[in-house]
Structure formats: structure tokens, C-alpha cells
Amino acid sequence: MQAPVLVLNESIKRETGCRVHRANIQASKAVADVIRTTLGPRSMLKMLLDASGGIVLTNDGNAILRELDVSHPAAKSMLELSRTQDEEVGDGTTSVIILAGEMLYVAEQFLDRQFHPTVICRAYSKALEDAVAALKEVSFEIDVTDRSMMLNIVKSCIGTKFTTRFGTLIADLAIDSVSTVYVDLGNGLREVDIKKYIKVEKIPGGQLEDSQVLKGVMFNKDVVSPGKMRRRILNPRIILLDSPLEYKKGENQTNAEIMKEEDWATLLRMEEGYIEQLCVQIIKFKPDSVITEKGLSDLASHYLSKAGISAIRRLRKTDNNRIAHACGATIVNRPEELQESDVGTRCGLFEEPKAFTVLLRGPSKDLLNEVERNLADAMGVARNVLKDARLVPGGGASEMAVAATLKKMSMSIEGVEQWPYRAVVQALEVIPRTLAQNCGVNVIRTMTALQAKHANGENPMIGIDGNTGEITDMKERGVWESFGVKVQTFKTAIEAACMLLRIDDIVSGIKKKQAPVSGPKQPLTSTGEDVNSEQMIPE
Image (cartoon, rainbow, N blue to C red):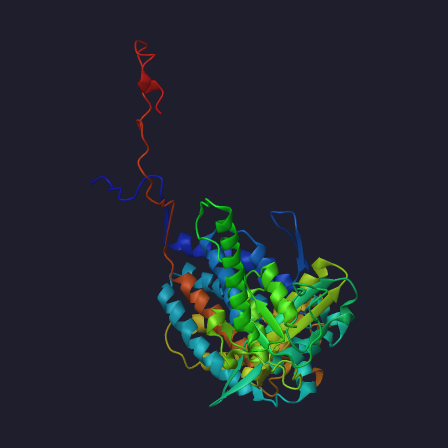
């Protein structure tokens, strides 16, 4: 018999076949189990300690997973799902992980029966297409100008969060800020850029009820010369700069050798003349305020305050962009290239603000961080509804309605693909099942009653009340979810499950090529004669 040929290095670890599939499924299930209890209004909080000793208290799926340090590659890809969901739609981060974990868990039985992963993936992809089509049938459009409806949607989406006890406070803040930066691009396209135009400023102290939306851009900076420059200006002309208003320093170490005392005076005059020239170019446009991202010297401050101009220095780039959007100014790189069109004059017209600052107050930093995470979710929901004004029922009702439709359609599928297709129905039921578990009700009895109500397809709005665990009509309770979030959850979860099922080989222990180390690789042996040899002590 021929001896086996070793292609890989002995230090490299390789796993193939069924062992890889089982390890991936177990790792994904473990990640899903970590955040399973954080779903729904009766969710539990998780306390996380980071490396520096800081504490994170939250029930936000993405925030929890972001703090976890995992080593398994499949678990890492699951964490990536949550981040993608958060960036795309800003909500549903917990649901997508639980659903993806369940999709992989129900696939394990088919791998045990020697089903090929491609067959399972093909059935999953077909089920995803049918699920999105079924979801469209359950969805309905709303009028985004109806504030009470918008409040209901945002409240039901953040009803699982810590801030739900403060009533409509966070929902009001989210709707006010998002509806202001909402832009209709025409052709049915709408843009709502939260990251660019909405800033959240956290100031510890006071009560949470003191939080408010400020119509404009707020930044924690003072004018350069507090006694001489104005702090309150109505309808100001604003110039935004991306360059320093001080004498240019050499890029590297620059030495200037001065032989005479007059030369030193000449050098100082040249510096003063350069700064004066910069200030003259700015002053001729008669601005009321000059804001720069870089430094501003005392001399420049003197010239500007003499001309009655308020100056602010070292502002963050993101804040400068928001101010530019709010007042219609253009950020200029060189003062000599300034034009009248670059001056911002829209500031002060608060009837049409273009950027917002949400000011959050609270007793502690930990609380403020949690409120900020809740607000980010609420703004994500409001943005999704403004971009796509379709809703689906919450409380697991849309999952059960889609599962009932897929169950009927599975009868018409021929061949072995019918079984993985049916498994998707079983996996979709994990969301209402988890809601029931977190409420503390009898899960089997509740799920059986819910399945019976959806089996005849009379009312797709029947779901589980997350607070009491009762089976109720979601339309009467006003519990809604954004159509965009739900579709994204289904797509991300099923596509991720397919991707992980297709992995059949894990090679670990691959290192980058290193420079050869000087000295002998093998340990040297000695007879005792060459004990003092230099070879015994490799450098």
C-alpha cells in the first residue's frame, strides 16, 4: 500500500467534511443563544466588561456581539451579520442572528442523512424568494405625514429597549430629527443620511426628560477670544475653512540661521505680514463668523476680532460638514480662493433647518450610552419607513404568516428539496417562539394555538403580545415593523446560512512568511570537547 503524501506543513491544522459542518452549526447556535433572551419587550439585559474595565449594559444585539471576542471563524462571520444589519437598516440585529442560527440548526438533520449542502442551499434560496413574495402580500402602505402612525411604528420597534419606560420621548426625538434631513430625490427615490447630518451630543447631568432636538448644529467649542468676540449673531455670514490661520511651519525640522539682529526683525515682520494678508482676504467678504478645522494664531484672532468677526478653531471635520450643509457654505482650502458663493448665509432661517443636533441629558454615562443606542435604532426605523412606507405586523405575526404560506407551497415541490424547504418554515417560527419564552408563558400551548390560527389564513395579523404572551391581533395593539427591516432580516439570515453550509474545509495555522532567523534551526549536540564553542550560543 502506498504511503500517504503530506502536502501541508505538520503545524497546519485541517478539518474537512461533516466535522466542519457540525462545528460551524454549533458555533453559530452558540452565538445565537447568547442574545436569544434579549428579544422582545420582556428581554433581559447583558452586562459586559471590556478589557479596560469599562461596563456596557445593554440588550441591543449588535452592541453585545461587538464586545464579544470569539475565535471560531463561523462565529466571527455571524458577528459580521449583526454589523451588516445595523449598517443597512439600523434595526433587527438580534432577530437576524437568532434566525440565522436556527436556519443552520434545522439543516443539521439533513446533513446527518447525507443530503448534499448544495441541495439544502438551493431549497433555502427558493424559500427566500417565496418568503419575500409572501411578505409583500402581508405588507401595506401608510402615509408618512401621519405623525400618530409614525409614532406607533417607532414605539413598537423600540418597545424592547430600555427607554420604552419614558413614553414617546425617544420616538419623538427620532421622528423630529429624521423628517428634517429627509430629501425626496424624485422618481420614487428618497434619501435620509443620518450619519452625515444628525449629530448626537451627550451631556451628563439633568434628567432624561430634558433631552431635546436642537434645530441646527451644536458643538462644544467656544470662540477664540471670549471677551472680544460675539457669541450671539442673528443671520450671520459664515466662512468655513480647512486651512490654518497661522504662519506655515516647515514640514520637517527646519533651521534658520540668523546673523544680524535686523534679520530676526525682518523674519517676524514677514510672518506678521503673511497672517495679515490671510485675514485681509477673509475680512473683505465681511463675514460674521469664521470657523476653521485647523489652528488659528493669536495675531489672526486680533485682526478678526478688530473687524468684529467671531472665530472658532480646531473643529471636527464631521461637524464642519454639517455646518456647511446647514448654512449653505462651501468649505474652502485656501483663503485666497474665497468667493462670495462660498459664504454661508442660510443660517438663522430656522423654518427650514438642514441639519440637526439631538441633545441627550441623563444622570450617568452608561445610561446616556444606552439611550444613544436606542435613539440610533429609533432613527433607523424612522428612516426606513420614510424610504419605504410599507409595514408588516410585529409580534411574530409576519413570520407565522410567511411560514403558513411556505407550508402550503412546499406541497408542490418535487424531490428531496421539499424537506429543506419545509425546514425553513420550522426555522421562521423561532421568532414568535422566543418571544413566548421571554414572556414566561407555556411555549408549546401558545405556539400550537398560533399555528392553528394561521393555518386557515384568515387573519395574518395574529401574533404574540410581547408583554403578556397572549395571542392577539397586532392591528388592534398597533405593533408594526418596517417592511425593509423584515426583508433585510430574511435575506441576511438565509444567505448567511447558505454561505456557512457551503464551507467543507477549514485550514488553520497558516502563518505569514517570516525572514529567516539567523543561527542553526536544529538543537546542537555536544560531546563535551567543544563546550566553549561559539556555536553553542547562537546570536
